[in-house]
Amino acid sequence: MYKDTNRRSVVKGLSWRVVATTTTTAIVYVFFDRLDLAIAAGMIETVLKVGLYWGHERIWHKIRWGREQIEPFNLWFTGLPLSGKTTIADLVYEKLRSLQVPIERIDSSDVRKLIPDIGYTREDRNRHMKRIGYLIQRLQNNSVSTVASFVSPYRESRKAIRQMVKNNIVVYVKADLETCKKRDYKGVYEKAERGELKNFTGISDVYEEPQHADIVIDTGKLSPEEAADIIVHYVRRHYVK
Image 1 (cartoon, helix red, strand yellow):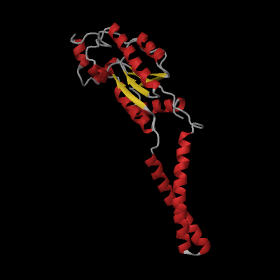
Image 2 (spheres, one colour):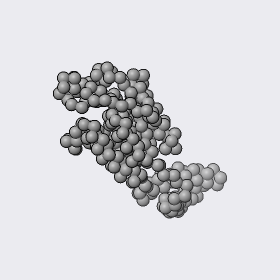
Image 3 (tube, rainbow, N blue to C red):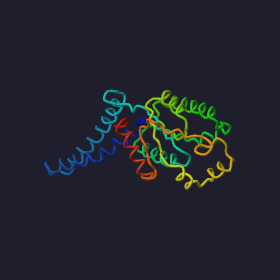
């Protein structure tokens, strides 16, 4: 959340007074045809009303009436490796930040760098999802929304996330296996096919498609920018008025 500092309120008051005082001076001069009187009126008005404006702003800052808090939400991006989750999620995050939504970005690769020994078995992944769910809970308790991108191949782990966090929005980034292989700039699919990577989703492990995704993004038909716009529009319609 953001709040105006005293300095910001003063600067806002000064900028507004430049406009208002110029208008007042011009009006006095037009009616009385006296420049000295017009300037004097403008100066007196400026000093008085800057102080009044500052006090008015600080009083209203403390009044909660008429304010609506943004209900924290979680955008959960799921899909095959290299389906486009991270690219689209990054764009969505930046667009929501520009709307001044209190939000944090959580990506699987970043978390695994911090905890490299998580593991990739079904049990390891499901346990890991509960850790992420707990992290999102803590952020939501402080009115912070999240954009999270994880392969999360199993329905039970996605169900656990939905049960743990508020306003969970599942975004299924859909791309067929061959398309993902073509995007494989890391060479991970080739390594998985050679048996060098165990429990690799789509090759040596299953990906269970979401049955009730809130948003389905077909990356074969939509550009990342188009996909991001669709998701942001959904969030604005339901959570950010």
